[in-house]
View 1 (cartoon, rainbow, N blue to C red):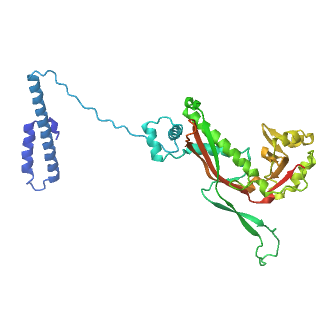
View 2 (cartoon, helix red, strand yellow):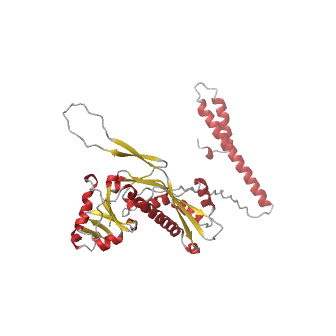
View 3 (cartoon, helix red, strand yellow):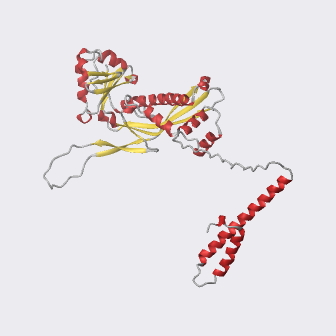
Length: 375
């Protein structure tokens, strides 16, 4: 039954009829109950409408003029956005905070909820710039363990032997030692002038990452080669003695081949050259006998098929030194890639940042490199 088409009298009549029907045998009590409920709701609606009409007529009769029904707009609740540490919005908020730019409420909330940790985008950018393939750090074996770590180091390795099938196997006399890597802090304090105020946030972020990473990367690269091992990486120089025969004053093709021949066959495949730019450009590159054995790809060189890494630190005790060996035998552990924090001091009004990286490293097998110093 369509209740809206019925008059009030018809609805009341139907209610009376239902009162009589409930006593009939087989009456559908659930359906009748639902019909009574619907009729009552319709009657209440009619009553409310009649009351409203009476109020409007009274207002018009009293001369209140046109009646306009207004509706209150629903309250709009602004939903706060949450930005994760891997979002660009969070990275920008973090960058603004360390250069002391004003943050809006949304940015302050994002930093507060995440504990102002270094953004994931910043960590990834630092790692990409820290380990560059063309440099020594990009060629050694790098791992990321957050705390003290120990790596096995073979001190005595005997050759394999042949025997009859089924023969008893003798106990190995190989000896294995360990290299313990413990965090050393590499620190750079970066001072920024007032001109940073005119830079966009993206540019500021990249500028900070580039400069801090460049300085720390240089320090770690240097120590892989010549580090003392005291509060620093232990350099290849500290682990490998210079060959007694040395390098002649005049470099020849034969002297280069002699260096190559001194390295064991197990490390020849992945070997690289390490020398100063002066040694390479003035002695190697100008040697016509080597013209057919040097490949130049921009500023990336290969000598006898092996990469050349140019480092000023290869000048040791005023002697030009050439290292030749497999960098994968050198182990570096980065305990913490790079932490960037504002650094405040009463001695300057400039903005300063403190960049710190925790790292350690050592050559796991001293036979992986040979070292020749010019006599």
